Length: 327
Image 1: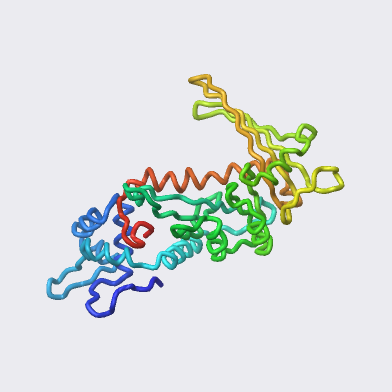
Image 2: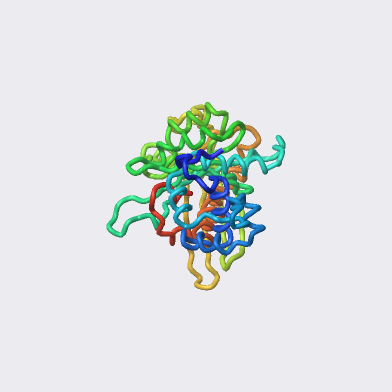
C-alpha cells in the first residue's frame, strides 16, 4: 500500500521488505541507519525470509538490503501515506466495541518536535502532529507540520482521516479556536479544550464567571512521592443564569480545574489552575468526567512522546534527510 519511490529498473529489494526489516530492527534496538544495516547483515536466514527479503538463487540464501539502500528509500517515501497505512493497521487491531453506557472515547491531539533534526546553526526541525486514543494510546493519525506553518493549520487534515463521530477530542490551548470548534461539531464530535491568556477575550470571560458559587468535585491522590488534591468545577453556560455571554461555537459548559500538590520529600507545595470550555451535554457533562478527559489528554506526553524519547531515543537521532526522520 506504500508506493515505491524508486524506478523499477534495478530494484532488487521490495519496498515491503525494506520497511518491515527497518521496523523490526528499530524495535530490536537499532537507533541509526548504520545500526539498521548491521542488524540486517547479522539477521538469521529464517528471519530474513519472514520479513520478505530477496532470495538470491546464485548464493542460495536470503539477502538483506544494505544501509545505503535503506537510507535512500526511507528518505524518499511519502510520509503521509506511510502514517495512514500504519495507523489504519493499528486501528483494525482494536476490536473494542463501543458501549453507549460508557464514557465516549477520547482522542488527544498534540505535536512533538524531533530535536535531533534541528541543525546546530539554528533553524527549524521536523515537527509531527499526532492523534492518539486516551485509553489504549493507539496512534490514529500523524502529520508533519511543514516549516513556516503551524499545528493549527494541520489540525483538520490530521483529523480528516479519523472517524470522530461520538468521540471527544482534547487539545491544548493552541487549538482552542472557533474554527476548530465548528469543525469538530460538524464532524459529530465533542471537544474539551483548555483556555489560556493567548485567547485573552475568551480567557477573561471564563475567568469572570462566579466560580465561588459553583459546586466543586474534589479528588485526592497519593503516590509517586506526592499528594495531590484536585478540584473540578463545571459551569453551564446560558443567559438564563445571568453569566457573561460566552461567544464560542457550540459551547455548553466552562470548567475550572485546580490542582494542589505537596511533595513528601521536600515538603514543597505547588498550585496550578486551568480554565477550559466544552460542548459536552447530557449525563457526560459532569465535573468528574471533564476532569478525567483533561487528565487523560496528557497520556500523549507520557505514553507516546516519552516512549519515543526514552525507549526509542528519537531525539538523539541525527537523521535529517528527506522524510527519513519521520519514517
